[in-house]
Length: 104
Image (cartoon, rainbow, N blue to C red; front, side, top):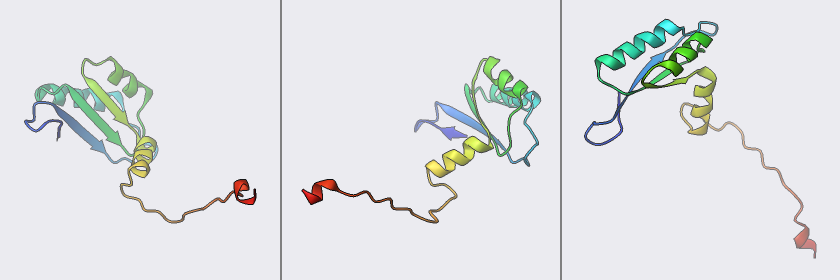
């Protein structure tokens, strides 16, 4: 759970699943998560997986009355690289270009 304000009035609930490649998250898991959001009176949810979401899971999330964001393994990896979470710089490549103004 993430409080988006100091008083905790606006909360985002998170569910994370670490599944092996090829083990997709189905529509049933999305409906279960939606039910838990309802139980906590939450209006927003984030579902993260190291795997992928089935087409039915994505469709279910789109049609539900609450805002659900789905982040699959590929998107998660891109976010981790972008924000330097769980990764480090291994090599830096410098590409040089001739400064033609230098020779004038």
